[in-house]
Image (cartoon, rainbow, N blue to C red):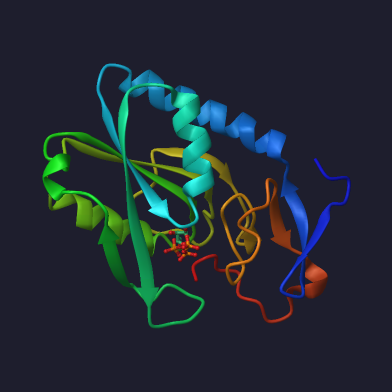
Length: 194
Ligand code: PRP
């Protein structure tokens, strides 16, 4: 872990919220919970791009049970920084593979919950046996909708980056998770969607 708790991305200063070690501890706990429930059946893991790619990589390896892995991209249109409620979905697999199978949606962060609701509604039309969600982070103060079954950590409604999450495509590569530093927050949205 870097000793410097700050990073600067696109001119904004961010402060470390969770170290890579803390994140891996959370990932291991989530993996344990999921395996306890799904040891005897093969999950279809639906990784939500782009932000969840790093979390999903670690989570699926920690679960270490047979599963199918596919990807879905959800993009909000309308408002620039906030979810508009209109979500465009690209799903990178044959829908028929979902029928009568347990689906696990893997998200990095759930903020308003609008993206997750749209994804759940989209997947439900292909009649999976069940749909569950694991999210590394949840913002309970802003969230509405069906609660994720597995939540790594609840956080305040802050803008976070790192470990797959970005600020204007910057910072996804970071191993730690950082929060927008209050001194530089200015008019920055607290929403992570965008
Ligand atoms: C983030 C996150 C969720 C969504 C949550 O994705 O990965 O999919 O926002 O926001 P909501 O709960 O308010 O709907 P983002 O739109 O930033 O795309 P990205 O993962 O490609 O960066």
